Amino acid sequence: SKAIHDLKRRALAELEKLDRAADEVGRGSLEHLERFNPTAIETFQASLCAYFEELETRLPPILEEALPPMFGSVIQTKLLEHLCASQRPGENVAILTYWLRNRPGVLQRWCLAHMSLATRMLYPRWKRRFEAHHKRKVTRLERRVSLLSQGPS
Image (cartoon, rainbow, N blue to C red; front, side, top):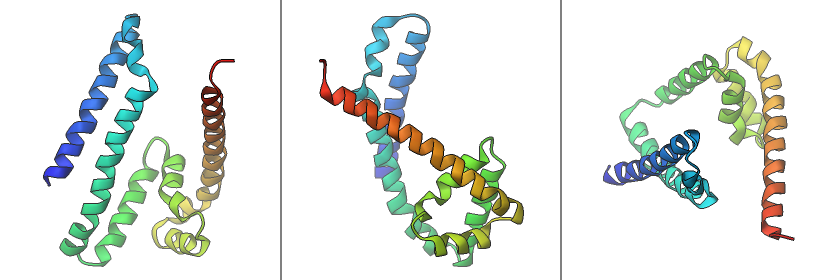
């Protein structure tokens, strides 16, 4: 749809601005460093999130109408296989299943339905590693935000 294309175009335009600034800074041109301020990154993030939210809203009904019900299960299994073949399968699979963290019964059924035995054996370690790293990153970010919000001493 036009809305999806417009949002995608906006997100890509913001990403191009950041890429150009990164190239200039990488070549030693410090006058472009101000493009890396939090506002520029937040603008890109907001445009990217808007694009993904629009996709998440519009695509499921289109797919549900166009595909037979069992195809959703096939798509999930194929997506999981693709993630397991990626460079960082543990992190990718943990991110994919993160939304089920407070629903252990649903998570267990999903894992049984879509994961191979080998993936199910590795999954607990992947999940622990992801939670440890993710928690550390979030704590560090919270600390930085807190320091920045206090302002200069």
